[in-house]
Image (cartoon, one colour):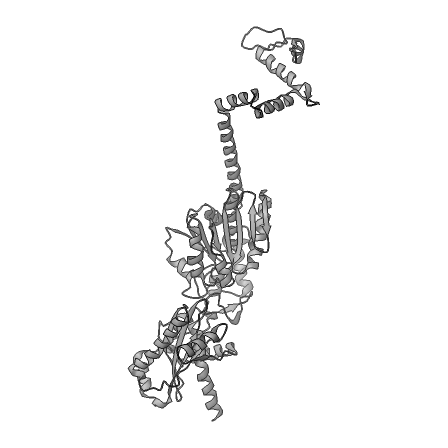
Length: 544
């Protein structure tokens, strides 16, 4: 395109009386423009004119850039120009710096958007550097929303992050986390490449992953193994089965490679001696962030300052009630009202008391019965009861409980129990010829009992298991009346502190043992061993 001075001069003519040279330079005749300004205008004029490129009329600059790229790809003059300019002038470094800065500013802005929608306590969780976080909080305190924010803050700003959320039941996790998490991602403008509600999996465009799982049973629990995670959140820890195993054998190993964070969350423990309570009380506060709060500190609830008073009034609760303190304040206060067996001092016996009791009994009236509970996913338990046909007291004289490891070990435990009875001087004269171990016949129990009885020649037979609820009520009565005698601090004593009934959605006690809080082993063995005693008592009563 030829240079046209007249065109340049007429592009920006000087107005009458206008001074274009405030610094006193010589004025130019071409509209008062400096040579630099004239060059800019000439370039602009030239670039705006259409030219022919591959049979089409396009702006000159478009054609120039196309020819430059064609030449660069062919190794011609374009390649030399691009190489000289991009590399010698550090343009690529400048572009990289700009893009890095832009990415950082964008991710920081996403984190800020997440952070500003959190309560004060949720913000503490988001910014914590602790590898373990324990949240023991009341209902509607904002735990679930906080988990969603923590997941967002992990997977959105940084590519390739992995978050695992473990709920008590899969459906609960889907409703509480999966659905609102997708809504939050949409609000943030974060794109996903994979969504599967049935499995609970979400994958983002930046390759970050969220997996929502449950702890429903042993198989589901074992399926959690493998892989690595940056965040693992365990919800409803007060009700999660096999918590110690879940945390120490499954979750914590999956956080080692990433130096990831474990979050354990729930309300207060319902019974004493749980792993959930242990971690809350024993974890080093210098290593673990422990947070306790309630609905009155959740600003996203209407009238949150007054909600605790409203809850107490609507449910007829007092500040001193264990249910209120545990469920709504998130305190460590046991659900005493829901205990299955309430042990008191009248249930404890000493060796001296047992000796005195034995002296008053005709030896022919004394017998032993035993119960054996197989721990397919937990512990084997053995319980031996000494009782008299002429007295109502029953003494739990032998207790055994150990993690299930196989039929041979179980058989050895039965042999050890028999040897204990034969070797104790107090029991030498008592007939043991009719001693039978009544064993759990559910699942593989019948097969195990048959194997122990035939292969090891031990007195093991199937227990009577019909109407367990009625058997529990009979044992409760024995405990309440003080006729069931146990050793203080023994296996059964400790188990009774943890065994509770379920509560429904309205906090009413349901007479079904809550195995998610604690699964009874020795207590089931006690039921098996007591049934023959109750049966004999009924027969004696019916015979007058």
